[in-house]
Amino acid sequence: MIAAIVDTLWKEGLIPGTKEDWRVYAGLLRTIPQIIGLALSFLWGVLADKIGRRKVLAVLGVMMGLSLLAVATARSYIELMIYFTIFGIAITGIGPVIYAFIADVVPSEKRGSGYAVYYASSVLGMAIGLVIAGILLTWRYAYLTTGLAVLVFAIPLYVISRGVTIGYAEKKEVGKYGLRKALKALAIPTVLIIILQIIAWTIPWGMLSLWAVNYFEVKWGVSKKSASLVVSIAVLSIALGHVIGGTLSDRRVKKGDILARVKIPIIGIIIGYAAMVAMLTYPYPYGKEDLLTLLPPAILALCGMMFTTFAYPNINSVISDVVKPEIRGTVFSVYNVLNTIGWAVGPVIYALLSKYFMDIGFEEKQALMYSAVLIVSLWIISLIAWIILAKTYPRDKARAEQQ
Image (cartoon, rainbow, N blue to C red; front, side):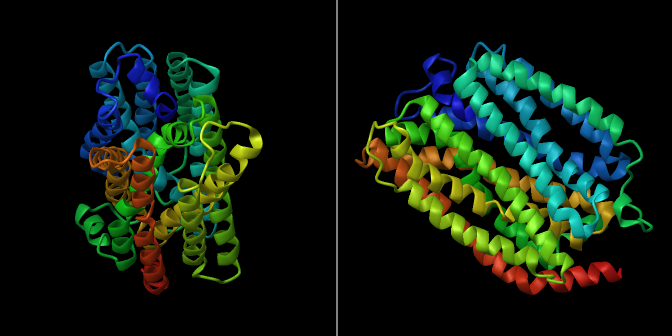
C-alpha cells in the first residue's frame, strides 16, 4: 500500500531528502523494518513448531493490525519507521508460520491450490490497498481501514482453526521436533537450491512492490491515479497467476506428472520475464492518459506479473513435499529470512542504481528504466535454479515419502 503514497509522504515532509536522494529514505522504510523482522523470523518458525501454529498466527495477526492503525497517526519519519518496524516484525514472522499451517491443513496433491489461495488473497489485499490509498481515500484513512480489517480477520481464523494440529493433513504419526533435525533438512538438495536462488527471485518483487507507481508516473508522465490503476490491475493478475500456477500443477500431479511443480514455474518465468522487460522499455508517449494509450503497456505489465507468479505456490509445495511436518516451520523460517532479504533490499538497490545513473548523466526516466531492467533480469538466476530442480525434486520427494 505504501507504493501508492510514497511520494505523498515525501511531499508532506514525512520522508526527508532531495529530488535525487529521497527514494533512498523511502526505501529504508521498507528495508529496515524487514531486516529487523528477519532477526526474529527464525524464532517465530521454531515457536510455531514447538507450541503450535495457531497461537503464533494469532499473536502476529494482532501485531499487524495494531501497527497499521498506528501508522495512520504518524507525524514524523521516525514515527513512521517505528510503526512500520512493528508491522515488519509481524509480517515477516507470519510468513513461515502460514506456510507450515497450510501444509498441516492441505494434503500434498492439493497444496498448489492451497498456497495459491493464500497468495491470491494476499495479493487481492495489496490491490485493494493500492486502490484505497491511491484512489479512494487519503493515506491515513487507508491505513486505519486496513488495520481494522486485519484485526477483524485474525481473531476468527484462530477460532475456526481449532483442532488443526501439526501434520494434520498427513494422516500419519508425526515425529518430535528437533532443531538439529530441522537444520539438517536445509541440506536437502531441493531445499538448498530453492534457498540459494530465493534472494535473486525476490529482489525484483521488492522493487516493484514499492516503486511501480512512481515508475509509471515518472517514465510515462501519467497521474498517480492512472499509475495506481495500472498497478492495481497488474497486481490483480498476480492473484490469477497464483491460482493458475497452483491449480495447474495440482491437476498435472494428480495425472502422474511429478515434474509439474517444476515445469509450470519454468514456463511462467520465461514468459513473464520477457513481458516485464517489454513493459519497462515500452516507448510510451509521455503524458498521454487515454485508455488506448495505457492499454498495451498495462497488458504487458499484467502478463509479466501473472506468468512469473506461476512459481510462487509451487515453491512452497515443493519444500513441504520434501520436509517432514514437525520441522516445516523452522525450515520455512530460514527460507523466509532469505525471501524477505530480497524484498527488503530490492527497493534500496533500485534507488541506489537510479541515483548512480542520474549522477553519471542520465535523465531520470532513463535512469529508472535501466535500473528496473537490470533488477528484473535477476529472474534468469531463478529460471536456471528451476531447471536444476527438475533433477533433484523427484528424488528428494521419493526419499521423504519413504521415511
